[in-house]
Image (cartoon, rainbow, N blue to C red; front, side):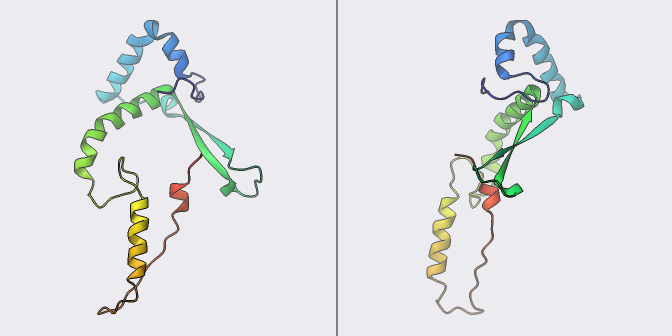
Length: 144
């Protein structure tokens, strides 16, 4: 986990846990193990603060902000463990046609495929041809 990440609502950073690891590792381990044994996560572990970061100097609407979630360390830790465990299974569960949000696959490949479809749109087919354009800019909005 990134040691320089911003603290969540509990005020603790990863760096804090790293510096005090020799004193707190047993408690952290027991807490994470409790979660995986079925104990519900306490509300304060799952609390998250949302910070709005402006995308540019000209802010005119809510779309000009990027929301950043500031989660607690325990929430990040449990999420990271779940992601690492699921990453082994997901390639077996996700269709080979799925391109977006899959590690090792690029959404750009779909853009190239769409361009090829558009070029062939004028070919006569039984029933006609149609293309739908969906605006998914927000789904792929990211920070540089």
